[in-house]
Amino acid sequence: MLVWDTDGNFGEQVFDTVYAKGATGAIVVGDVSRPDTVEHMVRLADDFSDHFPARPSLCLINKTDLFMPSEQSIGDLRQRVEAVAACSALSGDGLEQAFQRFAETVLERDQL
Image (cartoon, rainbow, N blue to C red; front, side, top):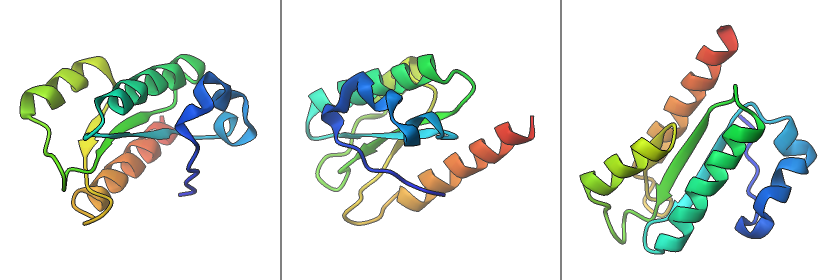
């Protein structure tokens, strides 16, 4: 798995870059302690799906070591985007599982 970390200020222009065009999927991260980044994460995931309809995306809510989102807020996100996971990059909680599930999703779709 090759991971590119892009600046969230790229906006829709990120989909014009070579690495986005060649991406098999996208993991879009939002900071749970900053609700505006979660909304931006949802918009980017939607835009990725619009630009690359057959490719999976995962919205990854980060910094759960600071604040754990409620089940209702995660449920609300699940109704808006293809897939949602919560993690803490600092502690590693949930991170490996999220990447593992996403890799399995990519492999399953490649076999279709």
